[in-house]
Image (cartoon, rainbow, N blue to C red):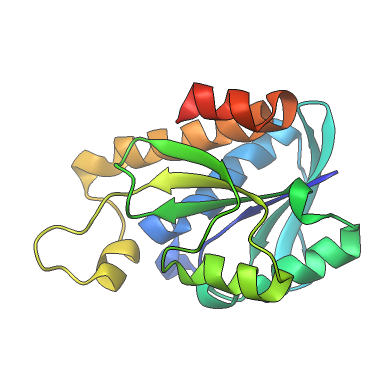
Length: 185
């Protein structure tokens, strides 16, 4: 079994913002996995399904981005999922919009959601699907940028990024890290 966590912030004001790339990707995966019922458990909205022939639990933590680690740890414990079967999908400022990167382990690069998960799990060794959102224009504060929706001309690129991330998850499960990196990085 795999636990696939999309990072984001709950609430209508955050829907489809750059910081919610993980939520948007998990929504796409939910449709592909045949998830028909979402429930609240362990501080997250969860649904079960099948991807790449494997049982999966899809999750969207409802504790806000900066404290995502608590729900992720609770879900890992509840489902007996080891970190090497955890896939976290999140936004990444250091990757161009329209691109993703697949990796295992590493730091948090200042991403507070990742920092929280690292702290709560006590390890950095889990899979990440990094969704490129690029850097804010000019002197725009990073927080304002990530918490805003892409402008109309960039919406397609953002949706493409989330769609690509949704393709990468089952590919990673089916083919492993090396092949996923060759295909998507």
